[in-house]
View 1 (cartoon, rainbow, N blue to C red):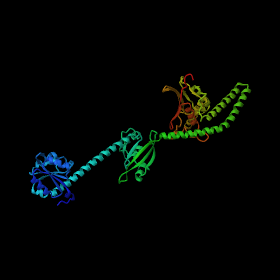
View 2 (view 1 turned 180 degrees about the vertical axis):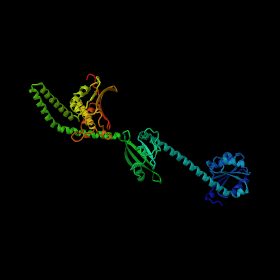
View 3 (view 1 turned 120 degrees about the vertical axis):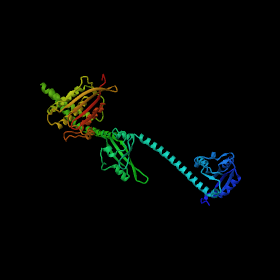
Length: 505
């Protein structure tokens, strides 16, 4: 007897045109509920009225062959079909199985005796085939879904403008998006297979401590800062990716360019320092102006009383220098409140010659002979002359200090070169002045802070840290810019760019 309890409740449809054979098959089934159809038309009608659980289908029927009712493979059909024939024919058996029959039965007393077991075996096989089909379909759908997700996430990650790196436990880069290749690849087409310490630090061994290894060990995210060889600043954040049962599988490294953020913060700090400088200047201006006005007044009395021209000329010089000090104090006061009025076209060659005349005695004493290269047609700039003098004197003073630090005495390589040129940018004519000295140079870590107020590398008593900061502010207030470039131990170049005065100004 069959062991499957579902066999006893089967709905069996027998399709047989010989009544005697049909009755013999019905008795042989001995299980479930049986129905009999005499041809293919009756078979189709019976199936439409009630779907069978299993069909025993004679191979040759009055209105056609059973093969035309089969669906290959067998599990794709609506129900399992077992083909029957009175004569064993291996060719027909193969054709029936290929057409979609679940099994092939030769009508015989032996086959009828084991019919319940045959039905049980066929149904078990049918269920397995159906389950396998469902599993395969589910796997196919799952694979398709995950492939779609993979392509979607890959598209997103590759489109992210910030660098992304996927790292394995052995610190090998498993995947990198195009932004990471552009940022850290140094011309490489792919970063996969590179170890992170070799990529970022050029090391053959891991860094100590290693934030990536720490992320793998603790499962906590880590954040570090990285400075590239070309001066960029990055914030790198390591995020652990957990596996189902094996702990941390990978680490995702996210990069963010913080150079602009650092520059914004530096500008904000500089702005607050300059505001404090303006308040400080306002507090001391009164104390400076009073004695300066006294000096100017006394010098004017000397001019009025002295008869010889030589002494009168000295008194005039005292008045001139006193006025210059008063103008510098006034410029310091207005530094936080830039003024545009009273500017006029200033010939830069004349202003530079005046500055070199004022600093000439010190430069000669130190063995420095400035070399000027200014074209005759260098256009003037619209500016306040005393402010330009203040900038140029500060740059000359800084160059003199650097040259004396490198060459305490006279030296053939002790040079200060000042050159000028003009060019057009977007239809606007600009004037460019370059101050180049062969002094000690400025280290990169100091170069970034050189323009900050109150920052100086000079010993106490030799610098306040205000000269370059004020000079930058003056140039920027005139619509220009001041930039520094330096090679430690070789030279420093300061470039001043100002818009040329408009014709007729």
